Length: 373
Image: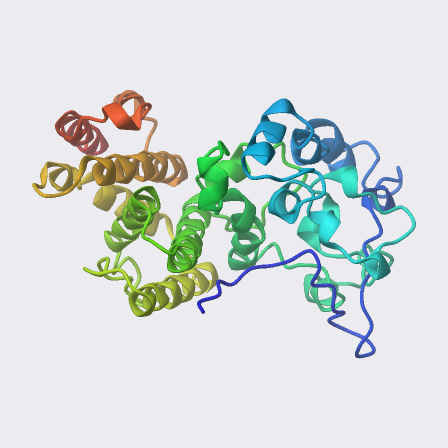
């Protein structure tokens, strides 16, 4: 059986200290004092930003109490969505924490809380603010290393990309994972490190998304056309960037036949690509090369023999990529023509059933020309 790389909120094994001990989840309020992350100012308002402005706070759990959630649950014969693993694994991940791993202030209803992303706090809460502690010390104590883009993408992708086919058929919305764009859309309670590149975050996130979709597809009893189209579009997108860095492994073209071995191979190669890309130095030149390469794919949308759904899925992923890469390219001057062309491309993928490949190819050509002005 193929198993994707993932992080679980129940993985509370202590990284440092006495073997066999576990870190408990102490709850978001353990971070909320005014002297820590519940105060004023940019350096101390992280809890306030999360609790008051971030949809990850409260809302994921509250969603399970809505009429739509109950309708989906009824279709799947789920008695209570707030207590069923098929729902709580993402909307209330703290439900998965065993009782022995829960501190006194622990609350399942906190939704996707501080420790869902940063890891159970018992091992590092007191020490992480010490002036003599560096980032490596905090990670050793059990804090998740979210500065590492590979780790960050793995922490988000499971709930922002993969939805079981049965849930989709019951009415759950389809999800598209895009690490850079989704990070930018969040009210930030963090600061990126020096040398940060949105294009690099985008690239790592897309490689991880290929891996997760490869894993999901490998578990389907029968190939699902929509899932295959989404997977194929992602592979197509990253395959266009093979050779972006000579140290990156080539992803290669999608296999002619989908089977456990070919999907396992794609899973491994995409995971290795994500690791290498996260660790590599990223330059503005790489961002520009990626943007130009993807903007030059209009001919692919005129290919005979590629189904309409597959073309629409390619376009869907492509416009998101062009948007993040265009924003990330510091070497490009503000370009109204490029912005207008990109807006046109977005409008052409608003309705995938009505997608017109030739019209999209023409608009993509215009976007490519605008980059050269």
